Length: 123
Length: 159
Image (tube, rainbow over all chains, first blue to last red; front, side, top):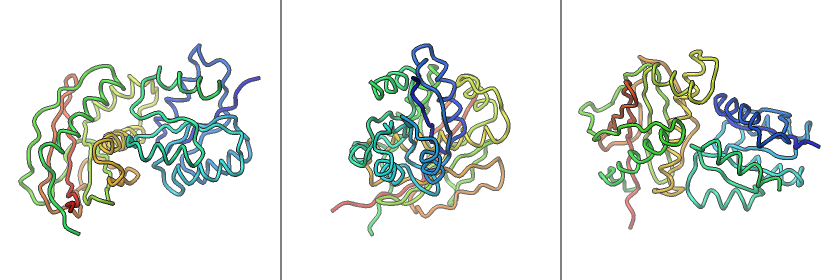
């Protein structure tokens, strides 16, 4: 069974980039079930599509990533969340992990770094 | 609150962020040049596309990335983006400003509270910031293209 992945980022370019990475031969077990550009949309879409995993930006309009992670952890505790964010300080990473994220990748990221992190996320 | 202007050491953090971005995202190094201080009180961004991040928390002011269409077009190609409309250029210039600002938090810590990006095309984009210290332009070349990171920040003085 494939892992249902949702991509959350306010940048269309980043959403497209991660989408293209799903054709990497190391990720045949992932399928994209939703894309969202802010936390509010992500939360609504996640409740509907029930993804197994989510890549989550932090700095977003409407609802930021931290608030979205906190709500997702409460309503979809089985969903694994990989933060993909430009915020590179340790305090932010720790706070995201405390609120329910399972991994953290800093932007800018290499394709290899994201592929490896997604594989580790779903191990 | 009592603020101070950025120091050359602070500015170096942004130069390193530029190098890191181009190395990781494009695998082609950018040549980061010496930063200089804007003489104008309100610097105006002059390139085709501009992405602006407003900062708050322990800072006040803004961080902006200003780049020509050609440079952004090449970055989109490297990232595998097939479509290249103005919407794509506005998106990527804002995302670069976001990534460069976010990287700086590794040095400054979470006191550097950054906004979502605001992007626009050339003209009509004066930097209305609350910073009162000098604004720095950090020029870079990447292939045949030149772009600038414009950092206009004051930092809360500690102690």
